[in-house]
Structures are given as structure tokens and as C-alpha cells.
Length: 398
Image (tube, rainbow, N blue to C red):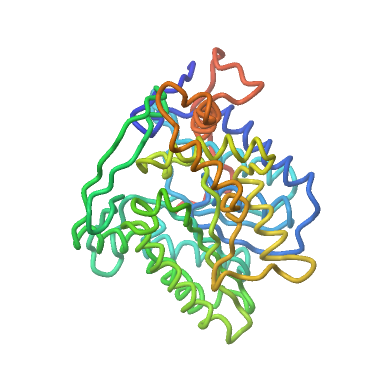
């Protein structure tokens, strides 16, 4: 079938297998061209099929030669419906790993569930023995608690008072004002339950209890802080409270793992175009302005470049690791540079529908968005027939 992008709001309902494979190849080639990363050996990535989780798995496998397990919740093709982008990404990654002689497995299912935790532990016991790095990059709007059975839904809202600021429809380039009503206490509770650190700790506790977490193991979860302009909707809103819980969990896990030389961190990453960030009002316009400024200053990094820097300079550096910001690793440091933020805010004040293409990198935002789903990849003929039915090598089934 000929596969074209079909969008609904901030998501694309189709994905292109060849385009996804091309982008995985480009990320792998980038990592292979860098200096080798000194460690880890066996890596578990939770939320491994897109964005920072996917880039983490690529950096570990092709930068450190690590064996990797990826856990993700994606769907295969069915009838005339394509598979999800994460499915195609993971299929391409497994193909690349096999070509390099790297050991890897993929598990598809709900990472919040006890069943997937048990399945992952059984795989580690059978094939890997232990894991010495656990990446937590799960992004989901909902979570069903494995003990109580309660299903939580997250919201992206401010707290206390309504928030009004500029936003952008990145499909049309229209800049407008948006107002978002504050969250209720119940919405806040549910958002923390979905996006906080409880499930991360459950994973580490169960891996440890099963004896498959190596002595001296490291675990890292991902977060974002961002500039003051987004704080009301992000850092000081419902998501921010969930991230505060995540950061507190990191401190608890760090104390827990330290007895055997282990470590737990939260890595604060740069703002990038992801399915999650595209859903947050205000953020697409901010990212578009940020892209333009950082590209002009030759500071722009994409997911794979950020993850290489995390691994090579912070988690497994050859020399002394850079200083922590409390328990946080800050690889958003270039984004938050004073000269970058000053210029972004200057442009923000002037941004309108009439000048958005001039003052921001709207085209770059759109390209990155469509590339999330395998479109707009160089060298791919999108008018040619493609087979949407792609199998994942080393897929572990129940």
C-alpha cells in the first residue's frame, strides 16, 4: 500500500515503515561515529520505542555494545491500518542489532502491569542474568494501578488560577491566545499517579527482589523543567507536580541502591518535538522559537545527540562526571543558557501568525513532527508501495 500521513490534532494516525527504518539507521550511524561509551553491559529500557527512550537504547547498544531489552506498548499493522511508529522503530532497531551481533529482545505490553514486570524479569533471568542500567522513559496518558485496579488519567493544566498565553497550531502556523482552566485536586492526584515515580520504584523494587538488578546498577528517569514562560502550564502545573514526585523518588531510590554502589538520577533533558510535547499548549510555539535560536547559535541537539551526551559525559564519563544539580543531571544546559533564553523571550514577545515563519523554526518543527512517524525522511519514495506488516525480531511473547 502507499502510505501517506494522516493527522488528527497532535498525533499522526499512520506511520511509514521505511521512513522509520531510515531514521533508526541515521541514529545508529551517528552513535557509531562517536567515541565509544565505557559501559554499561545489560540495559533495560522502559518506554523504548520513541523519543528519548528509543535514543537511549540506541546509544547503549551501538555506543557501548550493550545487550538491551526494550519494553513498549505499540501495535502491529492490522488490515489497512499501519502499525504504530514505535513498532516500526523497534523492528528496525532489532534488525540493526542483529546485523551488529548485539543481543536484544523486545517486550510489547503495559509497563505499568505486574504481568509485564514478571515477563521482563523472567527474560532477564533466562537470557541476561542481571541488568546494570534501567532507563525509565514511560510516557502514557493513563495508568491502571496493578494493586488497586484503579485507572488514572493525567491532565495538562495549571494549578490555582487559569493560565493564558500564546500558542500555535503547528499544522497551519496560526498563533493565537489560549486559556486553560486550573486542575482540580482529583485531576492533580491522578496526574501524579500516572506521571510520578511510583511505577518507576515498583520496577526497581521488583527487579531487586528478583535478584536481576546488578550490584552497582544505575537507573535514570527523564524530566523537563523549561523556561519561566512555560512554568504555569508545565513546571508549576500538574505535570510539574508529577515530576516533583519523580525527583523525590530518585532520591529514595538513590539511597536504596547506594548500599550496593548503585545510583538513581533524573535527567532533565532539552525541549524537543515529541508526541507528548506536541500535546501541551504553548510548548510547540516555544520549541519552534527555541529551535531557531539554538540552530542559529549552532547549539541545537536532537534526541540521539542528547542521549549520547548523557551517556558519555554524565553516566559513564572517562573523567570526572559533571556536577549534579541536586539529584538532577542537566543536559538542558544549552537550552537554558542565558543568551539563548534572552533571545527566545525577545522573539516570543513579537511572535504572531504573520511572522511565525520568520522568527521561529516552524518548518523544522513540522519536519520533526512528521519524522516521528517515519515521514519526510530523506531518500524514501513515499509514492512507492510499502508493506505495512513488519515483524519484530526477538519479540518476546507471553
